[in-house]
Length: 227
Image 1 (cartoon, rainbow, N blue to C red):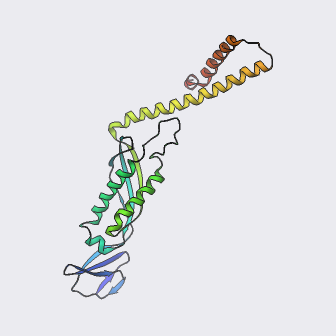
Image 2 (cartoon, helix red, strand yellow):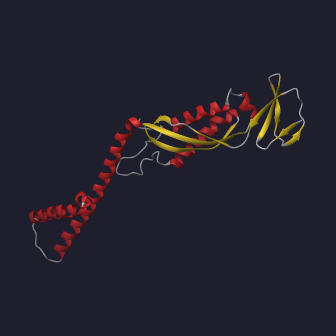
Image 3 (spheres, rainbow, N blue to C red):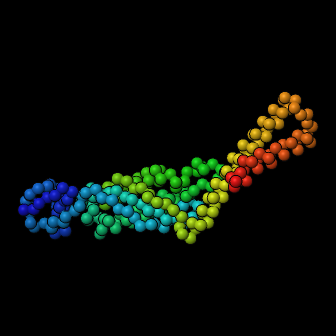
């Protein structure tokens, strides 16, 4: 007599041959000759240690991944590999390295939305889940989700990448300010000319544009931020 519990199963082998799995709950009777191996078939999660990986540009990163999984096929989980949990860990490391190497960690160009980066954790998680589910199916492990909890630069490059990120943000800010200033100067010169307030030749117009640009940029640019 044995007691079956919810979330637990018994895998039966006799003389090295798989004879079946008992998934029933409550009191039950089973043949005592086969070897009974208890298997946990409940939903489980595994959080990885920081994994060393590189992005599409070769920048060193550290990634932490959370995997939600369970044993679906007890025979494959016990007999196909020595240890299905070790197999899962190895596949998580492999899949993480492959997925994260396809995209850059950040975009420092003028258009931050292009190309797609690793900051899109939803897309990264979907690709990780798809890849892990396919790799672990052969050993009876069902992967429900694999999500990156943290993707950050490795300590040896973190300071340099932070300076690059700050410089990129500052450059985008300056470009936005300059565009606004040029629009304001163009509008001011045209309104003054249309209303006949000034009569300007090419030399005087250039001088006026230069003075207005300097004045407007000084008021809206970094000097204004410092104040």
